[in-house]
Amino acid sequence: MIRISSLAWVLLGLCLSRPGLAAEPTSIPRATTPQVHQAVDHAIKYLQTECAAWLNTRQCAACHHVPMPLWALGEAERQGYVIDKKFLAETVESLLGSKDKLLASRIFPDPAAPPDPRPQGRGLNMGLPFLAVAAQSLPAMSEGQKQSLKLIAEEIVQKQQPDGSWEFFATLRRPPINESQTTDAAWIIMALSGQTGPDSPKSQREALAKAITWLDAAKRSDLHQDKVLKVLMGVRSGKPPKTLQPTIDELLALQRADGGWSQTVPELKSDAFATGQTLYALSLAGFTADRPEIKRGIDFLVATQKPDGAWPMISRSTPNGDPGGAKLLTPITCAASSWATLGLARLVPKEKLDELAKDPALFLNTARKALKWDEPAEPAKLFGPVHFVGTKGLGSYLITGSEGHVLIFTGMPGSGEIIEKSIIKLGFKPSDVKIILTGHAHCDHVGGHVYLKKATGAKIAMMREEVELFQSGGKLDFHYGDSKEFAFDAAKADTIFRDEDEIKLGDITIKALLTPGHTKGSTTYVTKIVVDGKICTVVFPDGTSVNPGYRVTNRPSYKGIEDDFRRTFRTLEGLKPDIWLHGHTNNIGYDAKLAKAAKEGAAAWVDPEGYQKFVAAAKEKFEAAVEKEKKAP
Image 1: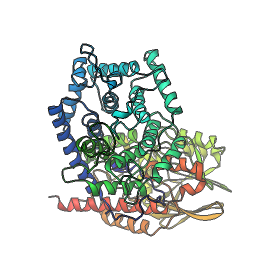
Image 2 (image 1 turned 180 degrees about the vertical axis):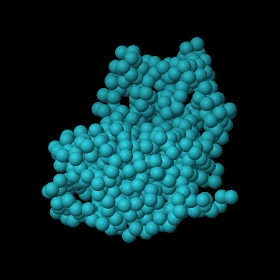
Image 3 (image 1 turned 60 degrees about the horizontal axis):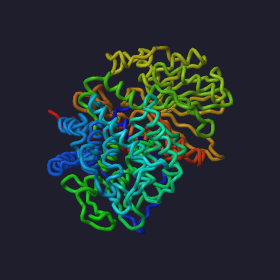
Image 4 (image 1 turned 90 degrees about the vertical axis):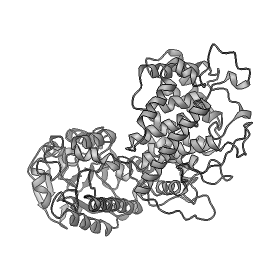
């Protein structure tokens, strides 16, 4: 079982980072997890204060000062950060609670007011789609708020032009908020998509389809934001990762030597607006804080934040809308700080550890749902004889051989049938599976053992120190033993091995290493695989996670747990894998690597640097837990 922080250290890493655009590298200190948490906490205070002040003085729900901060605050709360919930709820209600409140926001046209004679009076106020997109991210909406969103959708449809676009006033543009006609259209489409379903009016569904067709055919600029929004739209609409990969590659190639991104190339330096936008979009696409490029972006944001919680910005707008001035700093600063908060909070969550530690069932169900542990995934050949047969959130790996196959990890209870079907879909016979292994005996990695033993006739092999826990069905777990949610079907271990034993089956040889801590018998596997004619070391690391509620030094969960964890980190630090796989797909950034493999083949899985960063991050969290316990009364 991973600790809940892995929910968002959606935990990738290819070993090679892409070259930055700046001529000379810039030294940016590495940000620790506590430093990122502190940066987001400071940003939350700034955004709440700035948003409230703007509404009090301007009484206008401008996109840069209201929808963007609300979106960032909502995301931060979902990721475990403390926000002013009353402020968020009251602000959303004041804007969307009723039609009258929406009119009072000054971004929705009042039919009783005289027509606006200005050119932009006939266009769509872009505050509306921004507000709709922000509202869609909030956990719950009242009936009045839902009705206001319907009014916004109707306004969007009404202002659409015959060709599917919306009028754009180039002389009044406010970059980067209103960058171009295509970026405006992207925001409008995301807003309308969130309000359009099978039961929506036909005119609304047709308007959305027409808009998407127009944007697909439109010539987009080569600006950074067009690329970000293309990824953001693609993820929100459920496009396959491989279709987004070319744009993702373009974004990664634009990263500068200081770790950040800039709105334009090469005129401007890296800034929080472009960097935060990029990090947020890539996090939704499956990237995590362990990937080198992402980590460098996080480091840049933490290093450049101002003491007041905002980020320094220059403006590309002037009062008449022409780019190039530096007078409108408050709007761009607030918008940029919102994007930075969105990116940092999603990539580096602050877990509600106290709640999770007290309620193992909450921990399990939170992780299970958020990481899609039970959702079927498309099986795939990864490299050499290694195949993926797991679910979207839990890795199960089939290693095929001359005298039968080895299956590592079997997911949650109920996943056995999914894994069996995946094996068949790849063209293999379940009866050819001869050995079933796991990293440790928690329900998310052995839940399908009994089912698959019966379905395949395979033997279950287990590390000696883990046998007792497995054969108890989880009841003897030092932390979760009393929690029925963590129970799984018990069975006898057919084969028992010890530390450094080799498990052999025909041309398959797997070395088992005892890496205790997470459980007393957690096991890491090491094997050699021929990939594209080269022998590669493949490691399945295990045993690193200090789950909520674990105690490692002060009144330890079991005697010797601290020494066990230290032993595990020494062992894992000594391994030098070319490729590493894990029982949790997010730990290796499975989706992103799989998409990359469609273009690069097996080379996409080679990731020695990602492995070292994974181990280092896990060790850092362990040491933080030790220090926290030592300071506790």
